[in-house]
Image (cartoon, rainbow, N blue to C red):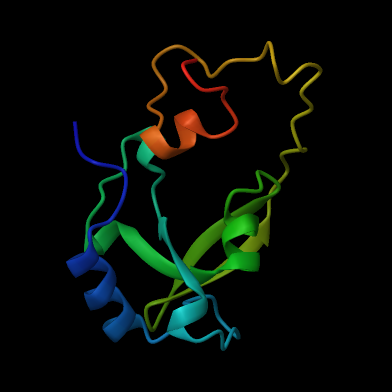
Length: 117
């Protein structure tokens, strides 16, 4: 199993090569960007330079919105397109658990959980 978080060297290389948010039309500088898996780590995506992109906070939130699809375009850039998927509704988030077999990053798995849970 591979790690879900990029290491410092990967982040530095991506910061230098991407130069900021890689979403077309966005000019957010490198210091305001996050690393994002193009193919989600939970779906088997690798944590390497070929599968990670730099995107700003608002675009990172959109990348995790199921009503949008992140699509690569020429020039090592990306764009968003609306999908036909509606937002999922969760009746009771305390009882809803991830589907069996879904990989969770340790940081994401522990977020919002009480200590010792």
